[in-house]
Amino acid sequence: MEVQDTGRLYVPDAKGELTFEQVFRSNFKGLHAYAFTILRDDIMAEEIVQNVFCRLWEKKEQVDIRTSIVAYLYRSVYHESLNYLKHLKVRAAYGNYVQMQSKNQTDRAEKKLLMGELEQKLNVALSELPEQCRTIFQMSRFEELKYQEIADRLGLSVKTVENQMGKALKLLRLKLVDFLPAAILTLLNI
Image (cartoon, rainbow, N blue to C red; front, top):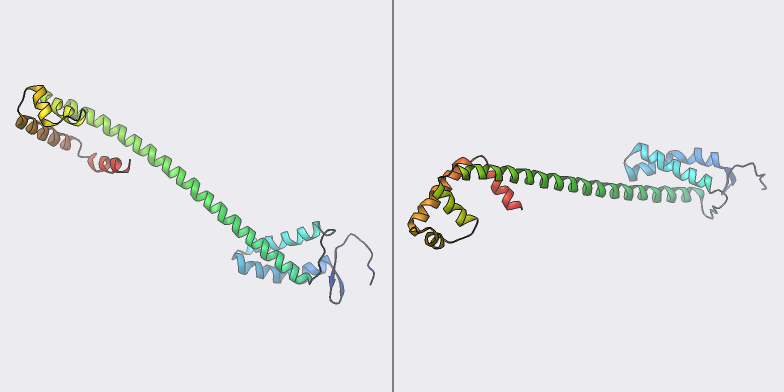
């Protein structure tokens, strides 16, 4: 059977030849249902099938279908659907990555802000301590001196240093009570 070239895609069929439009009309619903079983998205299933037909039309001169056109279309819809699902996975992974980066930046900013506030409150609380108490606390915590070293430097007994440290810690706990749970969590996460 000889067919004139009228710009239409003719596809071989067991009975002869079918036009592109005939192939589209007779297979669209089945292909759409097949794509839907893979994608579970009615709109995307329709778009996938339309993409397959568009690509077939665009490459009509290069496409050489040696098997059944229906088998070719189902295989094309299958691969196009899988490619779309892979694309969704990549997008989701990227979205998770961006979300985690944003959360990490927010967490770091919150920790920095909390640490700044804690440092400010600690400085105020330290300035309100009695002078000897503050000096002993600073030598112990900031210079990391042992009680005996502090006692030797200040000419005090070790027992006095211990008492002054206890007093400093008690007063600081009272002044920083609102910050202690958050400060401990922040320091543990750093």
